[in-house]
Image 1 (tube, one colour):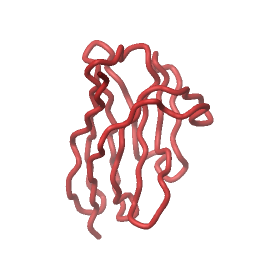
Image 2 (cartoon, helix red, strand yellow; image 1 turned 180 degrees about the vertical axis):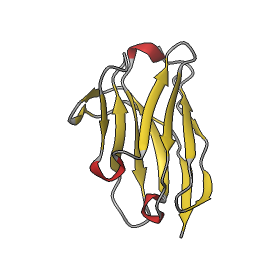
Image 3 (cartoon, one colour; image 1 turned 120 degrees about the horizontal axis):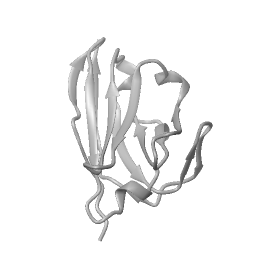
Length: 124
């Protein structure tokens, strides 16, 4: 059974940093595109970033470009999202997702597996 587990959320001040991590026990991690979505209260879920199975292709939504970095360590079966220069508008539940297809323009097909989310809150 595949599980997707996020960690690393928390409360920081504007301008601060957080690093989210994601593991997926039961998944052949190195063969799957991975990525992050977020959902703020009252807003629709949006795709934040994704990375191809090899790490050669990455995508970022415009609002996080230059501030967030997605990476993966296939040897450790772990996905990361380094979030720097955080803004109050980055406050959201962040979800890790596995599967689908990730290209330079974003998700080509939606992920198959989802985590329960980790909350990131940024105070002004």
